[in-house]
Image 1 (tube, rainbow, N blue to C red):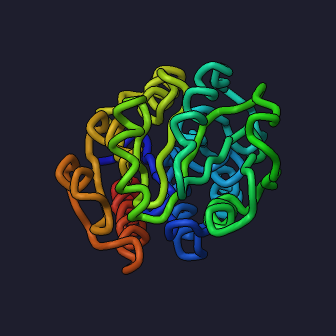
Image 2 (image 1 turned 135 degrees about the vertical axis):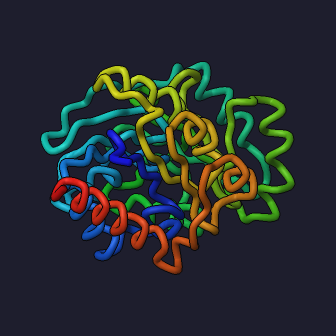
Length: 269
């Protein structure tokens, strides 16, 4: 089937976790886009990180970033929608995250705020190399442009604390074994994707999507064909129509290449 749009998560799907997109993934996206396919990146990373993927592939498309907090049209950087988190919500999420072994990050439109360098900052920077991290007390930082609050911890620490954190605020989602996060209520990935679909007059049931983690569980069931790499969480693999090989094995790139070839063959008659 020639889907109307193709939606891709980044971490653990289109890219290795905590790393930039590799050349083969960019080439596959370029091949798919060359068939007049609409490409949408839906990521928990910063806007700049999502834009870098489209720029690296040399293609137009749309970016849903900061877990739904901001949407742009590329090229050109037109911001279609931005949902700033209220100070009261930021304060609540910061309070919830003040636990031993947990680092907190504020995602703003074009930068990040964290309180100290270290493993958490290194991991966060690796997935968002296009923006600066401002190291300062979070309580003293500028909250006027916060789109998302993220938590980072070692897997055992996150496993210990996440049940208590989600009990305090059910909107918090665990996206990796080291990461949990929340955007403004009503501005999660699935909300942003629904808004963008309406804006573009897309029927999500005629779209294909690939994702692997907790912040993809809300939107994958909305698309006509949902796909997960084998490294996806068990919950995601149970929720999708198709499970392929892992991101690390190159299965996602191979899958995109096959989509491009199918569209090319269909166009050729």
